[in-house]
Image (cartoon, rainbow, N blue to C red; front, side, top):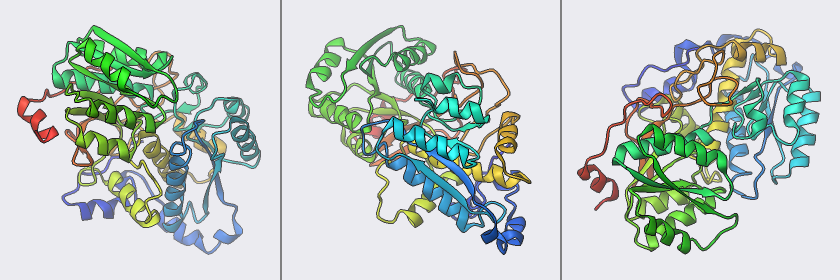
Length: 421
């Protein structure tokens, strides 16, 4: 299913097209929605379950659900799905596995079409398999999702580690690197090493940070002592990533920072903007409203439905993935004459070219190039960095660490401009 937008000539034009979300390549069934609107009250809603990630972070258990429901409001304001209301029910906002599991089981029994977001861990995968339901845009970093043949993964997650390290190493011409990781997070560590290896970097040191760490001074000192050409990584929850960047800046670190935005909050962006070191980010979803109409639509919805800025990390990869999950589900559902568990699953299972303007095409029928994955996932990202409080897309053509896509190295002048020094 090819869902690309034509490139807009102006942001206003982009937003106008983005209301349909996927340009002319997908039938939004506007006429059908209008015809069915009168009967909508007599029809059951289209029910979707939303699984919150298991985390002690207030940010991580609130933002994804907020944007998922923002997307649902926008869909309903634009006619719903064949005149039926889209209902996204959030399963647990407190990070409690048992509550999520009970909620997922109830929604599956009540006829939910799919479960979105979070992961299939803690028994959710068994519910999905029993009902033969698709897991649409799960986090994808848990083995339960990796091994589930009905998981359709577009978030970077662990793949973001490779994208970030590959891009950063190529951009800054690195030969030695330090990857900062949560204690014991072997999946991200191995994927980060893969990205560096693809860029020709074999000297990679891992610095592990225990959970709930608040004093990062010893870790920054260790990074300095290792004398890498680049450093960076991913800590979770996002608040820890912010503390890491702030500590590095306070200690005067000037070594280029390398990461991806699959874990990032506005406070991290602010810290990177003020830091004395250049940065490189692998961006998940074309975070540029002037270039990508879907991103323009996302920003439009945030402005309309989140006027008080309750969403604290609108560019975080998990947050944007969960918004896009609901948004794309609605567009696909509008294509289906009858929206059921089976019709949705069959459609996406046989999709050879799933994409939007902010995603490289994914062939869900193909074997994944990522070890252990049952099918293709999102292995593409955009070259970017943080500057002046914003994420900047440097190249509108996505690259891939897995396919060793060429990356343009930065000059010394560009590095200076990126840091304002």
